Image (cartoon, rainbow, N blue to C red; front, side, top):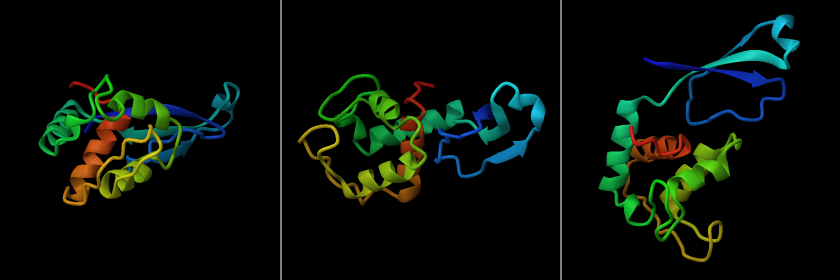
Length: 136
């Protein structure tokens, strides 16, 4: 497993809530000098996981309305990632939005519900979208 190391500011304002297993390791006064109080260690989205999520997005027709870097009917996946950056509840909010549908956040065109998509697959797709929809 690969890990992504992130230093988090004292007022931890950005935690990717899609990664359910993360650990804060207090470091002490040395890093407080630089404005950091803890080290965040969490699994990163591997290339294989990104490829799998991209295939799932294609399989469930997400790409009929969303492009990775361009708007089709709905917003581009990368625009979604930018909009939700810093929102610690982003993953849960987006999973719910994918499952039940919605409208008004990106305009008046509604997103239909996707209750037929297994929750685990929705979570993988959402994690990939929040990671910026990497090609690999």
